[in-house]
Amino acid sequence: MKFTCTQENLVQGLSIVSHISGKSVNLPILGNVLLKTEGGNLKLSATNLEIAVSTLVRGKVEVDGECTVPAKLFLDYISLLPQGKVNLEYLEEGLRVEAQGQETIIRGMNSQEFPLIPRLAKSKTASCKAADVRRAILQVVFAASTSESRPELSGVACYFGGVAGQGNTAFAATDGYRLAERVIPFTGSAFDSVIIVPSRTMLEASRILTSYKDELGVPEDVEWALAENQLVMTYGNTELVSRLIEGAFPDYRNFIPSQFKSESLVDRSEIQKAVKSAALFSRQGFYDVHLHVSASDSSVSIHSADQGTGKTQSVIPAAVTGEDAELVVNFKYLSDALSALSTAKIKMNMNDAMSPMLVLPESGDEQYRCLVMPIRN
Image (cartoon, rainbow, N blue to C red; front, side, top):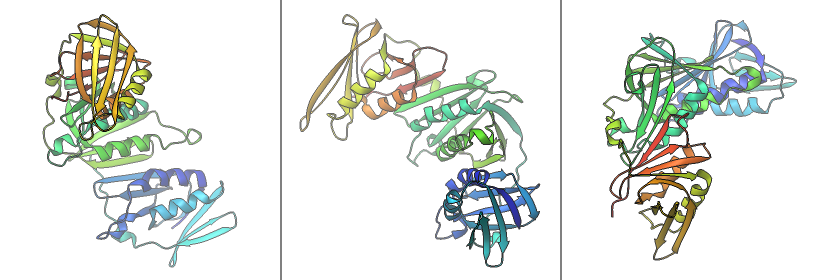
């Protein structure tokens, strides 16, 4: 193999694929990245057997071939090279890297040991704006369960059509204590499907969507395709393949109350500060903060108390519609919901101390909502 490209292109390609590689006692090859010439370009591939990521690096192929080298070592070294042309050549002693007077040999492993990444026949496809997908992932993935007892809750459910509505995709995640949902539009061949994507895959997809640099061209759309219980996500010259989680995601919309007795419109940054202050004095193991909505005073008070550390209370002005309401929630869950929003003001809808609270953006332009279950004393 003999290939020439720019240092910028090579760094970007390695940054995209090398993240999922890692040390494995049983399969050391999983710590390597596969370099293979394909269609006049260099294809970089990495896998952890659950997720596979590959991307094309544009350049000039002089001799076809393939090899593997340690992913982290290769990326770290290429990142230190000056910008400009980089020559790669595979020799018997290893991969020769030459750039502006610097020459290095990196030893790897036989490429025949690298796991085969199959080419899947895509049966259904849909396209979404990359910016929408990236934001939707970060707004819901935190709510997925980290427990292995219920695998169907350890990922993000993606509803194409169906409950999301024609031409929409709903991303939803829950661990039984909170629920997050974001709806975004999609285009392409219409299909009505529900898939559960592992959280690790979603986080990897989000990272890939931020890996492209402006000067190298940033694709606008992400293509989603289903193939043999696998998800194939294509973004520009990059392709991510991941297994899907089997099982049925709960019909979460039945858990969201249709009506609320109390609605509060508050400043997001102010309530975030108040929750952080209350978190310092919450009871260890309970992580409880108490919310009290006062319609007569047009305020929301947040307080917590611990016998060992003390107590605190913050009162925030609010536009309150409806009745007074009180609720005890886990401050971590409320903080995550507030961090997922970007509007200056947010809505908090409540019923009573035994019912969940719904956190929403101020306007309906962004179709997002987060349900937080109460701590029942």
